Length: 332
Length: 179
Image (cartoon, rainbow over all chains, first blue to last red; front, top):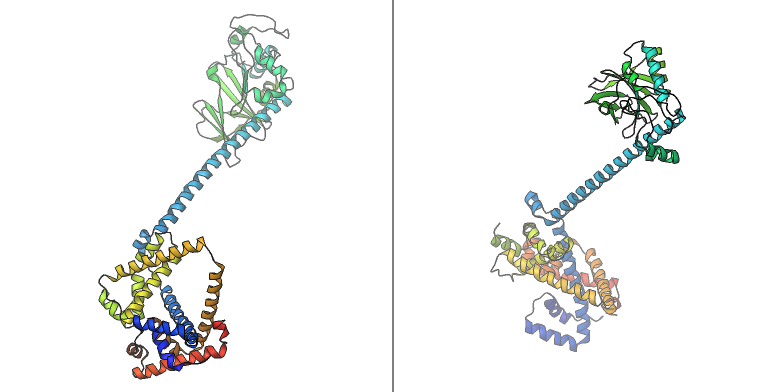
């Protein structure tokens, strides 16, 4: 490269912005006619351009290193923070809603599964424990057995007779109803349905009433040939098992394993987990009196109907009474 | 700090006055870009470029403000951002290979010069950048760099420039610049 020292000041003046517009025009014309000058000009232009770029970056880096204090007001005025906060709030609401909905759904599903499980186990247990359970068979002779057994055990003229036997869960109730002077006979439609489709019994029979006694005081042979005069029941102290005497049961699930019960407005609340084994409620009615016994895991318990607060079950240790309850429970 | 005081300090090449202005108007100026589909980084770049325009004008003594500094900065930011949007629009419509090649060639030259500038001493680097970018006058350079007088500063500037030229020529062939 040939140096044009005579042009150095001219080029420097141009690149430093020291020329007037007319001087600039003349200089550009000169560059176009002198290739050596042009070469030197381009070289110097690159150097000055580099210097300018260097200084520009230096100043910008200096400014970038300054921290901008936003302050509380600035924070509030900054729209981007609003967006972030709004997005976070929206996500939070959606998340909570989703969690709540899913947890509710799962809880309901779990409840349904547990109830069905308890229901199934109880019904299956009934079938296993009571293979003779056949709703097409009249129950009259066995009611007589109950009476005799009770009479023998209580040794009292006022002995209670009628036993309504219940095996209950939250939704399924087996109730033995007695209506005055009505012969025990199975419900025809239910009987047919259940006899024809026993495998579907669990799902199809949430509630059924086994015996029904004619209102007229009659004495006739039952289907099995044994007769009973219902009037005699009254004479020996058997009371009616009225609709309003039915005990409703509600299970209350708790985390601890302790099983407790209480009565509230005639409703029996059972606390604890009973999903392992089915329980049975034995209801023995006499005149103006109803005694409830609770059977669970091969043990009998006495229930106090006036127990308002949750309490543990009182196990019956009287072997004689246990034996009698066993007869009542297993007899059909 | 009043605008007149700020301008006075800027004209003398007081970088702290620049820092003050930058901090003072940051939110207002960057909002121009942010509210017109720009990013935070783009907003900051545009605002810094606008401030440097103000800086150069003030240092060269070419700035006669008839309005507030913030108004002046606002108009520069608006113009710069419009130019940037136009550039981006053109870039997205047609990308020419030739332009990319030229840009690459130019970038290479800048890289060579930058390396040589960094090899210079601190004094030479400052006197050259103050003169060519800031447009600082020799008396102001004398004050800022505490030279004895203007002649000393001029001589120093001449020698530094000569040294940079030679450094570039010695390290790189002419072909690097003119091929």
